[in-house]
Length: 76
Image 1: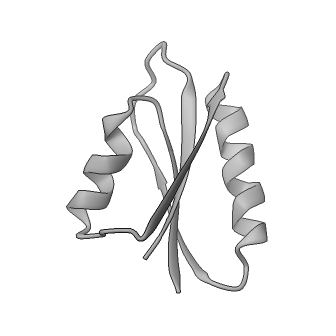
Image 2: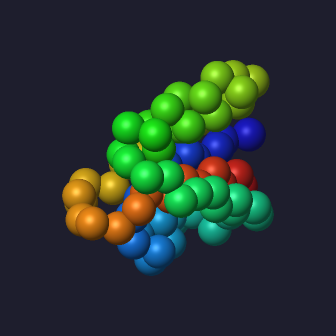
């Protein structure tokens, strides 16, 4: 199974990313908010270790606005 894990700040960023790679996930789980990008990155690293039995692709939104960070996992 292939899984995707990422962090973002604006709610539609994860949807746009998944659409851009042609992914129609069976399951999407969103978490947060995280107060900083650093906290969100720590969560992503933690999840990657937990998902060691499947192929995981990372994605990080490239903006740094005043909004809090969120994370998502998606599998399909």
